[in-house]
Length: 73
Image (cartoon, rainbow, N blue to C red; front, side, top):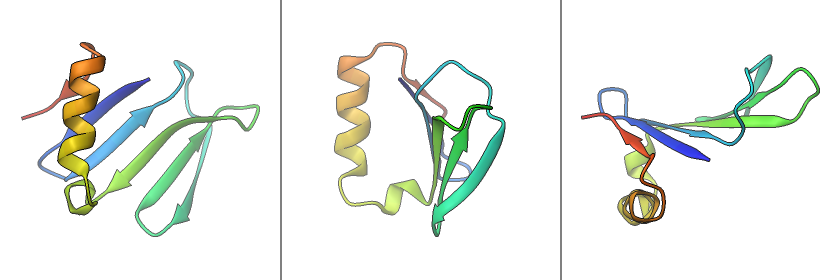
């Protein structure tokens, strides 16, 4: 799992699997699931991520547990 945050667009992408996305659907407003060709969720895109309660704590924990976390400045 990898977290990529883009501060310019305030979007957080959570990459669950190292597979290309084939299809996508907005499951609730501002949250899009990416699916591979077999229909398995491979990633989650969250718009306005910093407005989510606990966002800072989530990113801090992700950085502490996973040194591969990419956070764009």
